[in-house]
Length: 307
Image 1 (tube, rainbow, N blue to C red):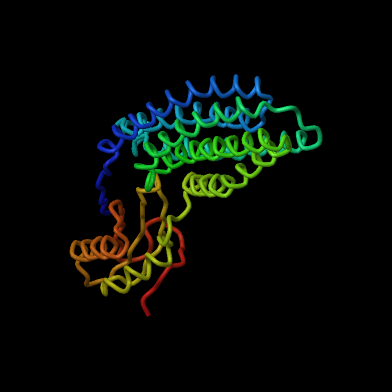
Image 2 (cartoon, helix red, strand yellow):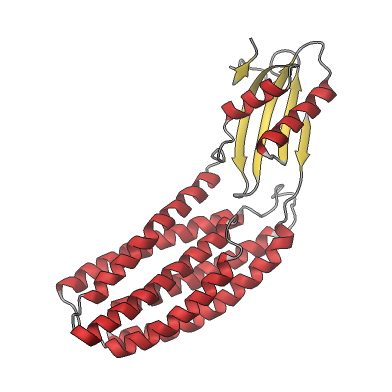
């Protein structure tokens, strides 16, 4: 059996992500108090909804920060792969939180459409403008490292919701000041929710897929089996292929490969690793070499078998 494993750059990138999240957390928690007070004073659902987002964001950013810190801990007897997956769990919780918060805003907006309260447009515009600047700075800070990190992407998505909410509150405040039309406040709140729902659902689905040990991207058992048989003539069949991810950046593969009786195990093993690395960029592959029936002791159907 062969085990090929290279550690990723979690420890290197984790420090930068940790600082970004801590700065964003401090800014979010501080402005959340200001926006919540302003929303209550102005009777603005757009401001209250945005403050609600920021309350959820504060908890989510704290969870994301904890996840980055936990991911830097080394493997131990209880966690042989380490703690990196805590980041995926944090992303899943953040995605579910966004979906639940969005549902609450839609229900509240429907009630306010029926009986819209008087909204202080001037206060709303001032507070929302400050919020827009704060959220824009936070989104830029988090978005820089969010391309391949589900955890940071979840945090950035929360802040994007706040950014859109602040923009909507500014528009609603201007409309109320110029026309006096109060329903614009809940209407724009719903618009913001609809803008972030798709991303929130995608984040929840992707992180849930990883937590359920789903095959990452194109790393299906069939694709892997085909690649091995095409690249290594000594392999007769490939079976017990399993693919999953620790995080969005760390795919894992295990498989059994049955060789021809006269095949050299060491050279075949190297060829299998080289083929999977070249084709899929894999850094963590465990291969069990066999010459006869599967050593697991039960009848199996190969994923792929050479004719």
